[in-house]
Image (cartoon, rainbow, N blue to C red):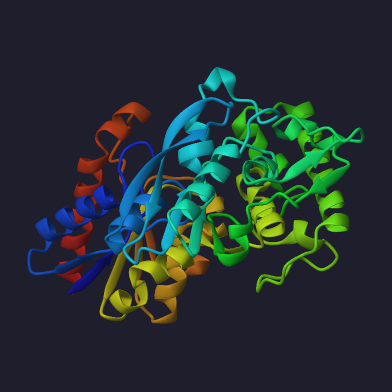
Length: 388
């Protein structure tokens, strides 16, 4: 029995590599004769940088960037083993986890640090840049990122807008003449972990801004700001050709993933000509997932929480769809199975298992994540072994 073990991170407790090791250790305890092939994955969210750099034999380069609150901080940039592909992770420079809870305010936070990392990738000679955009603490439509690379976003008096999504309603014009010219020579791929459009009930502001500290009035202000950004951009910025097609009549704001990271997906596509792709597909290609999958009889995947959002482009969903095409069963493990997780059966997940063996506080669950994951995997292996 060859088992492909390909989880994402278990947020707050285990990296994808640690989760894969725990699942494999438990499975082999329950079925010593099995063969476990480890393939840690990510979907464009936190951990994408680590997975891609390790899988390709690359290296990390640390640089100074502007943090989400405008502070100077250090953040890692990845250079893959080919020496030409760089990996930028927004969570490392503009992430929600970088902001103290009491200071979370998407009206003012900026993606400038993500632009700093992109410039750093250009300095390293990268010809292809993968930008993972999960885990942001921002809602500025990518204007901070573009500003760090030379763009200017101006009000009616020709003055540059302050950083943050709360000022975009004042936007009058966009000047891209100062963009770093090296951007014209590189391929930029957005690895998105969600497929939300920029605007509307499923858009960046209304779905994600509350998680970043916005109240109801601020959510509507941010929505108006992004709508103004989309209006001005569609009138003043030529749309590059990309394979992904926006929703008919919606323009670039309707691109799947345009609403990811508070609209950073939109900004990368419109201002830098990036292609937005499902992050899990980008990562799978980089790690040679299809070849590993072809030799497997069972797939075990998982992440910290499975819910309705997981079916919108997260790792477990991507793994299940690929495995289903080959008729390979998929077992998904998670610390929590939340409402909506059952949608994953439509993607190809055969069965789901919670690692919580009984009443546990969140703190205990996170602290014991490795043991609980291994124990659940062991019981699954013992059951399959008997049935086969």
